Length: 127
Image (cartoon, rainbow, N blue to C red):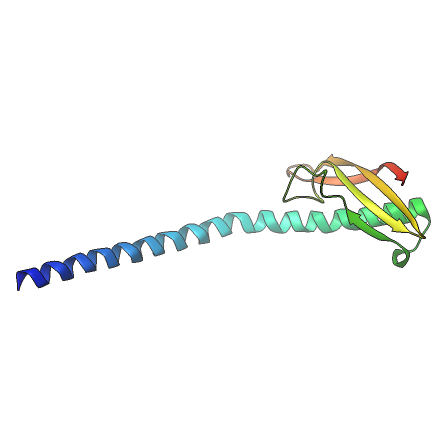
């Protein structure tokens, strides 16, 4: 009889350890999400703002409408894997009217954040 009760106590200990581990993991994830969610939201807003600024600058430089060109981010030169549009070095390709341009943007650091805002076109080269 004592052998059976000893085995059931061991199983209960393993089971309770598992549930405690799951509870701690969930608590850590919830706390991490609480701290990171506002930063991710700010990063996404800045990314959208940078895309709009880049589109407006390209439209003004090439004198084309929004529907007559295609812009693609050059990802191979971007060092920051997560913040491609909000990083310091933003480069993209623009395709319009059968021509192919490589565009390099100048950006400035946004106060209080670790993101950059596109200011102007630094260089535009037809390829």
